Amino acid sequence: MRQSKSNSTLSAGIARRCITPPRPVFQSGYGRSAKSEGVYQQLHARALVLEDTKRDRVAILTAELLDFSQPLVDAIKAGVKTRLGLDESQVLLSASHTHCGPVVDDQIANLYPEVDMEYVRWLGQACIDTICDAARELKPVTAQFATGVAVFGINRRRPDLPGCPMLPNPSGRCDHEVTILKLAQPNGDPVAILFSYACHATVMGGQIIGGDYPGHAQLQLEMEFPGANAMFLAGCFGDVRPRLINAKGSFRGGSIDDVRALGRELSLAVMAGLTGTVQDVTGPLLHRIETVQLPYQKPLTKDEFGKVAARNQGYEGKWAKVMLERLEKDGRLPRSRPSTVQALGIGPFRIVAFNDEMCVGYQLQVKKRLAPAPALVAGYCGCSRSYVPTADMIPQGGYEAHTNIHVYLEPAPLAPKTEQVLLSTALRLAGAKRGAAKAS
Image 1 (cartoon, rainbow, N blue to C red):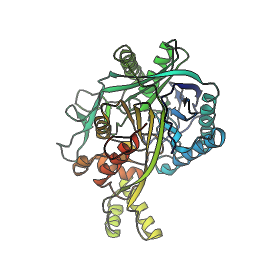
Image 2 (cartoon, rainbow, N blue to C red; image 1 turned 135 degrees about the horizontal axis):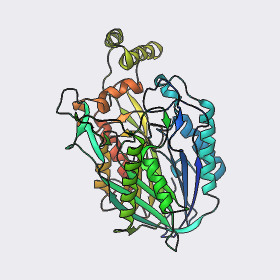
Image 3 (spheres, rainbow, N blue to C red; image 1 turned 120 degrees about the vertical axis):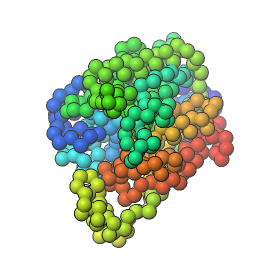
Image 4 (spheres, rainbow, N blue to C red; image 1 turned 90 degrees about the horizontal axis):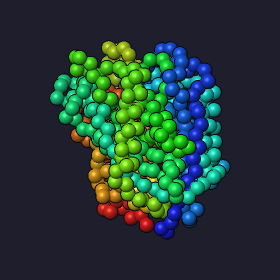
């Protein structure tokens, strides 16, 4: 893993490309049984390439997708390495987690009747081309960190009720801070504005393609700052969703007007943050990546899987049958699964990125333990294999800690040790003072 060591100025290049499917497709995020019927908002891939005076580079690509598949991640990073020479630690892929984007992951094809692999192949090449376009013309920039506030996210777990149902919990964990990184030319004009917020992009459902509230926020900011890329990096919001609540106290589905309202609220939070206290973080680049193993809890026995398969329909019954097939084929189920942790740095600023569907407690802990260094913590940066709860959530049960495994076909819930594995790795890669090498 390379790391430049001089205090240096930065250069930056950007590019943007529309990635809206040209034909009806199945959409990710819900178990839809029909293809899309229109577009309420175009989808985009946006790229930023940074270079310091030691010629060290990093590339960040944000895409309006639910997530990436592992083959798609591998194809994009391989293509960028071939054309630009960047290794996997130098390329960060971030999905906005819109629930109105196209299905791209054929590894969870059990959720969808069809995956349009021709589109997926085109998408991979489009992402490679967008990053390479951004690298063609680099301009001198300074890097500035700021924060804003948006309050429309609310915790969605109620551990005080049987089964920990998915209901609004005003006292549950949230992070209302909007983290912002502005890359600006010497005259002050922004080249790119990276921003992150921890709230699920689940305003819209239905059969219409779009980028949900993050997509609208990006478009609003690009109207305010013509020529700049506004790039949303999804926070760790596995257990947080928009505060859209009906008269019975349950979550309600939103409309296009709700998408616009929340997107506008987020874009205003970014603009307000940039007019407040701004910290210059211009400095050398850092890039590190590591794959760790997340331990599972003890799985059910073959007989127990058989009983679940016999008495349950839907996702749980299908899950049990798949586990029985895996046992028949392999003789055992895996005891752990891989997960990727990545850290990028600009001077004292850090982006800590997880690939999975992380719950907000991870974001709060990483930011707290890296303080006073400025940090942006993101999930959905790569192939999101399943939800990752914090250790204290696991005995509570509920969707994020347990039953999501039926959807993602995981053999068992993650074990409490998962938190320690991920946090220690993230802090070490980011260069936290305790137990890690400092960035220089």
